Length: 370
Image 1 (cartoon, rainbow, N blue to C red):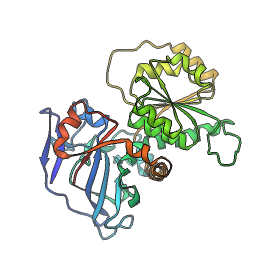
Image 2: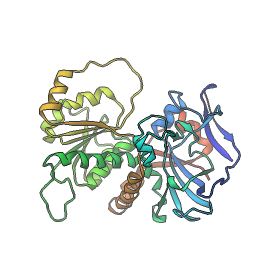
Image 3: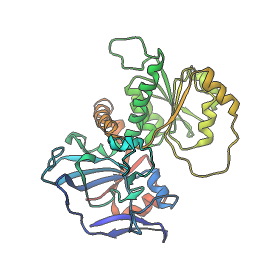
Image 4: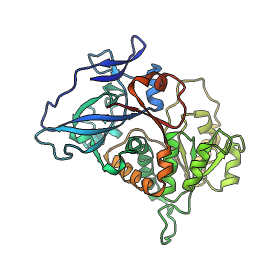
């Protein structure tokens, strides 16, 4: 079978031929991989910033945003059946008995750091024509989501972050008055930093939960992303029009910041303007650059006196995948055109170089694997 792989030692990215995997245990599932989304992580791995091959291999098959179809199941598989569409989870647990998170199937909170991540760290990914994995990591997707299901994995970032927001805010009287027909957060304002795929999907999730949602990005409006956001009820703010310091006056108290840029300078500048009782969620992983000058006194004063919370979120557990599948279905009903427009194009494997190494345009590009 064909797969797209990196060879870190040789600094090569290429289509390779691998033996087609076979089921080896009664709980394993074989997938015919249909699609894989291309994201910033894939590009960074292809630029050899990180990415670790499995033990004993010089190559790493990349890809973690994916959609597959079940073509074979082991004798004890009960979670999926042949013909099901599946989005597989990415992270696999560490081997240590003392890691409570991994032993509880919550490897997204692994204590030891010895987890594996398919397509990223010590495990082959999903940019291959076939994959075999345990049923534990399979998330069935309704057939009616076939066209947009490749967006499920990137949406799990927002789903995991929002699940933690609800838990964190139980510490104070943060809830909105009950209003018929309104969701959980209709009296709160959220700001998304960045209008890439993670930011746009995060904005959809926030609007769906009835936050008054703003997205802050560099490009002047109008542009295709600002038009998309307006179509779902979010508001677009260009960095050319307003500086971070001007946003509270424009928006009011900023209750939630959802960072989706990986730009640390912008993020820490924006943290100065987070509102009282606010939460700041980091999702990006910036590359190593020079040191930043930060007003730590102001940051510490705000965190204490304004009851603020800052946390990071990475990868996702089963609950976030299930929430993402549910909400992609909701988005499809509420905003079918906007959701479809997040996928800029679908391309054959042979186009991997332009998509992974070039300056590909659009929002989310997808590689067709079969």
